[in-house]
Amino acid sequence: MNKEIFLIHELARRSGATIRTIRYYTDEGILPQPLMQGKYAAYTEDHLNRLELIRQMKDAFLPLKRIKEVMASLSDEDVLRQLNEKTITYQPGEGVIRSNAPEEHPGALGYIN
Image (cartoon, rainbow, N blue to C red; front, top):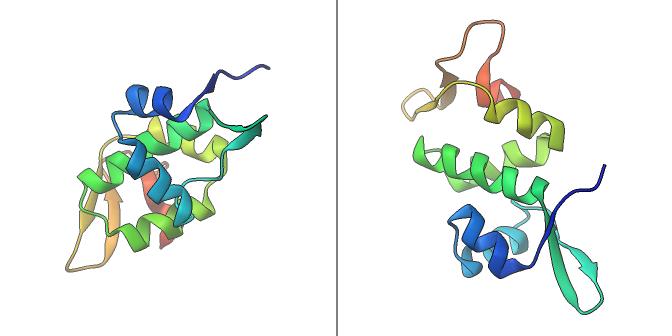
C-alpha cells in the first residue's frame, strides 16, 4: 500500500502545526524521524495521524512529557485506532487520562495507566 509523502511545509499545512513545532516534536522524540528521500525529509500519513493525536492530547491538557511517553508506546495502527475513539480528557489532579468512549475501548490512553 503506497502512502502519501509530504515535505515538511506540506505536512505543516495539512496538520495545522508549524514547521518549527514539527521539528521540535521530531527532535524531542515525540514524532518519529522523517524518511529521507535524497536531500529532503519526507513525512507520511502516519506522521500526519500522529500530529492529530498529539493535538488532541494537547487540547485535553496532557503535559508534553506524558504525550511523549504515550506516543512512544503506540504503533501507527494504535494511533489510527485512537483517532477513531471518543474525546480524550485529562484529569490533572488524578494524573490519568480518560476517554468518553465505551468501557471496552479505554480511549487514548489506556496505554499509560
